[in-house]
Length: 120
Image 1 (tube, rainbow, N blue to C red):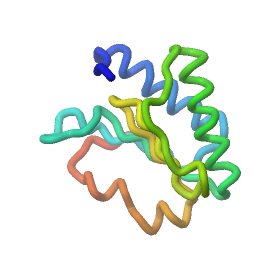
Image 2 (cartoon, helix red, strand yellow):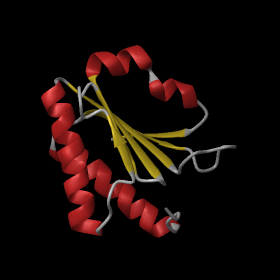
Image 3 (tube, rainbow, N blue to C red):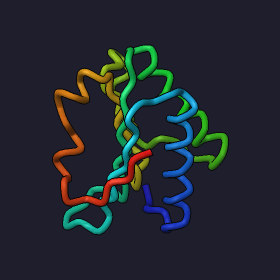
C-alpha cells in the first residue's frame, strides 16, 4: 500500500480521532512519529475504553467512518477476537484501542517518549 501525501494523512488522522470521540474513547493521544528515525508510520493514535464491547465499538466506528468519509479501508487489523487491544493499521496512521487496564499495563505511549504528543 502506498504512502499518502501529508494532507491526506492529516485528514485520515482527524477522521480517526473524531470517530474515537463519537464512541466516547478515553484518554485519546496521538504520537507524531514521522520525524523520528526508523518511524514505521506518521502517527500512532492510542485510546482506551472501559469494556471489550466499547473497544470493539470504537474500532468498528473508525472503520465505518474512514470508509464513509475518505473511502479509506484499513490495511491490516487484529484483536477483534478478544477486544482487549485492537490495532488498526492504515499504513501512515496506526491506531491502538485498549481496554483501560491493558493500556495501563503496556504503557505503549511511553515507548516513544521523544515523539510529539497531542492529547485530545
